[in-house]
Image (tube, rainbow, N blue to C red; front, side):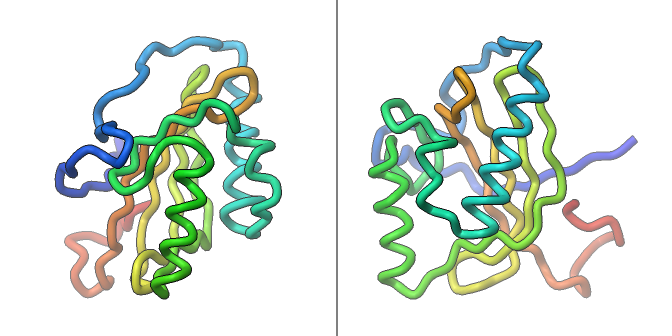
Length: 158
């Protein structure tokens, strides 16, 4: 009935040697689906939308955080280094709107809109894997949203 996507070119491994395609794939904890969706929704709303960075370790496991973003290393240190790099270079990673939260068991996908890099409108598709109520693994695709005049249809990214 419907199809959404967020595509980028295949990227080389990140500083931790991880790719966009490796990592855990087994769906577990089906009974935790709604709880896990809520954890991720709160993370997006409080940390990424509202900038409550002091709450990062509430949502992301500080001892085990595997990162598949092509430019970010594992761990909270890798996340912090990426945020600092953006700030030091006048770049942005700004979430403005959370549109969808989809999940099954230990995996949750969010679809959000914001600005990235030099401030271009972007779609953020983030896939999280959770264990014991915290995020332990993350994949994402960040892609520019073209001007509406370039769209092939009126459906948009969300």
